Length: 286
Image 1 (cartoon, rainbow, N blue to C red):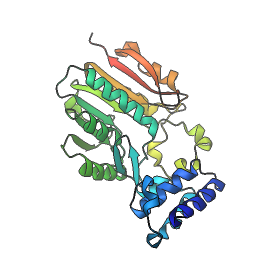
Image 2: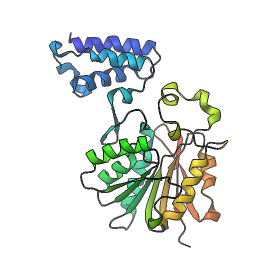
Image 3: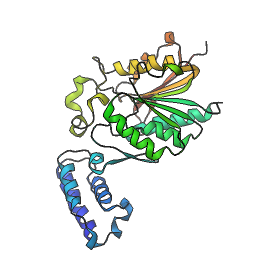
Image 4: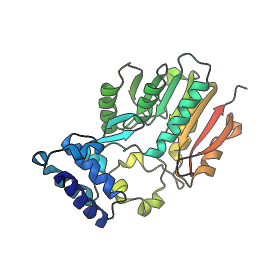
């Protein structure tokens, strides 16, 4: 039997005993990252090339460190992003919101749509939109300096057409020069209430930056309220917004985008597990 595959099987058992949710996938990803191959290519690594650093990574994952912090990379849609301590690790559920955003851009009768990503973190949303909607111009805002470093590295590595512009700023008052001109605002802001601290998985709670997790206010929605106000300021009449939330906040976020503030076509939308995951709305033309 191939030595690396045998070691992956042993690591899978260790990670399962440690309570890791996806032990086989994590063991394979650790092995692939250490040996510089794809997961589907692990069987091609000769026994003589086995790297004992694999077991260092297994021990770190066993201790609760996020997989992406160990490998230094995260996969999001068609991107491989550089991530690590200090930046929020993008999740698969956010990919669904980006899919909606891309569909919406395609349906717009706009030659070069203007998009804003509020709280860009690693740059996952902004870079995906720039890659998959190549005529879009994307402004990405991030106020945390550590996360901004990661976003800068990813934009420099992946934004070959130069369509993403980064801004180190608080999205509450950023981009005043774009007020009333933006076609689409997208955001995955912090939204977890502090009252749910004990229910958040330790590898998230202890490693993702606090500013990317805790939304503020008793309900965790203070940051989303800021997104609503900023989107209302930035969007042109008829422009759209999408904002992510937890699977328990759909109704509350729906009402943040109130009709009296000019919002129309407000909808809860679901992720791949059929749970409420993000709200979309259109700014009235009235």
